[in-house]
Amino acid sequence: MPAKDLDQIVNLCKRRGFVFPSAEIYGGFRSSYDYGPLGSLMLRNVKEAWVRTMVQQRDDTVLIDAAILGPPQVFEASGHLENFSDPLVDCTVCKRRFREDHIETRDCPQGMKGCAFTESRAFNLMFKTTAGPVEGSGADVYLRPETAQGMFLNFSNVLQTSRKRPPFGIAQVGKSFRNEITPGNFIFRTREFEQMEMEFFVPPADGPKWYEYWCKARLDWYIELGIPAEMLRIRAHDADELSHYSAGTSDVEFLFPWGWGELEGIAQRTDFDLTQHAKASGQKLDFFDQATNERYIPYVVEPAAGANRTMAAFLLAAYDEDVVNDEPRTVLRLHPRLAPYKVAILPLSKKETLTPLAREIYGTLSQRYMCDYDETQAIGRRYRRQDEIGTPLCVTVDFDSLEDNAVTIRHRDSTEQVRVPISSLLSEVTSILGF
Image (cartoon, rainbow, N blue to C red):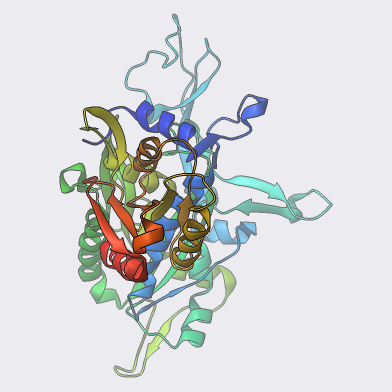
């Protein structure tokens, strides 16, 4: 049973160390979050699962890591300085600002009486700062609002060094920054976030085919990692929703507690970006196909996912409450690849006779998997704690282990317990986890 209430996940994240409010000791910094010991591991796992599918398991895609700061020329050419804006209105009563398209009625979202809104105006979402010690227009730089532009700027570099040819992809995972007017819904919409994007360069005629391919492939990725199919959908954008560069865009949406929300957009960017940067820079950003003796600017299909909101979706879908031995429990049924810890090693007692063996087992398993070691409280409480943070397997070291050289593996989802020889423990854990 997925979480019905966002507060269930927010509370669990704070209590167990997934996500903390940023600068909390100073009262917090709105729409910013720090990822704790478990959250940082899970977010990394989400990104690694994406890289595994989009780069590691494909021979037509490479990974780069481009700069976060960029000069104005980049974002002028891409259209961000002119077009990257949301409609902003001010409430004359509560003095707060809102996105006009997020207000369902003309009533103030803060519930103030006698409210009145100003006329809508465009609000650019770019963060601007200054490079160097002297301020001025010549020193203005911008924090990237998406990771995409670094991939377009490096198109020729990647083409020459990797010896790829269309169709091929350039992938990137990294931070982006948008000065959102109304951030909210926990880590779903924040001003600082991480993206998992790929620009897939194709011959112009093949754009529609690859667009359909990536829409299906990206939807399947979420299902394979544990989100129920009924909580996902593909929604094509209406004409008035399309970005200035898009010939067609569809979103992979997840059914959040507040309704359907975007996890990922798959866009047909055509040749807009490469053409714009070629014009602005004076550099050629095209491809010569020796097989057909044809020179062309590739079209681009872009699957672009938000890592943070994807993590939120996985948490919401995995959240469950059931009853074990007449006691209620909370369990995160996370896919093993996403779980912060894969295995927890739990000595039955803190007595020194069990500690050396338990530590030895931890040392062996932690060479391959992220493991937790816990010898506090009763074993039942430790099982519940590991269930709540999504650990797929617990390995219990008891006093019999000193005699029979075996341990007990407990499965998170079924709570089934199996006795396994220590000599074959690593291979058994690998077989259960599947990697």
